[in-house]
Image 1 (cartoon, rainbow, N blue to C red):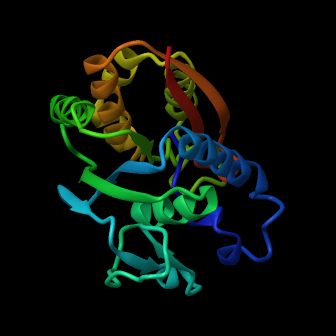
Image 2 (cartoon, rainbow, N blue to C red):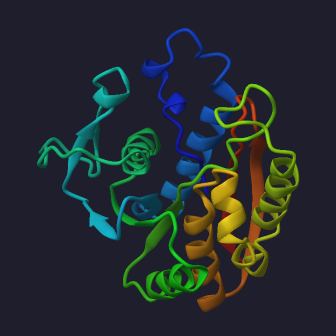
Length: 229
């Protein structure tokens, strides 16, 4: 479980590389651990619609200021170039950083119901092959006066509960997140986290490790790893 801000990519924040190092290093370390467990990934993130992308697709961060290319598959052969949503770009970038083989992105609308998210997770739990799950999503963007959204006193409690659920591999707590509250707080990770919860319920026996949880720029970023017991 990782966030997907553009600031993870050093070329996009040349004057702020040191200030963004902690979350970047946590995300890359989690991705490396996932690659060690499974070379091929399914990435789950929120997008404009239900959509499957990859793995034979390439893209670029040029829309975020610098033409940093990404590929959803390893190897010299470049696939078709597409205008990829941010979670997919970050998934492809992390794949390369971790040395993973490929990543297929499964996007769902940010407003998808908890039931639909859980059903998606159940379907992914039945996928054939040795696959790793990369879950991409940010917490609330309303932490403090410097937040991109106006400050909201509910953001702290919201993300503290998310962090505790990720640390404890608590699928029930993730499924209990209210979509309306998450939307009001700008927490686009809600739907992907609930996909994770659906998968964990369908294939139980997980333990969690929280690797990073902070809101350094007014946006909550959580990095965690779940493994089967």
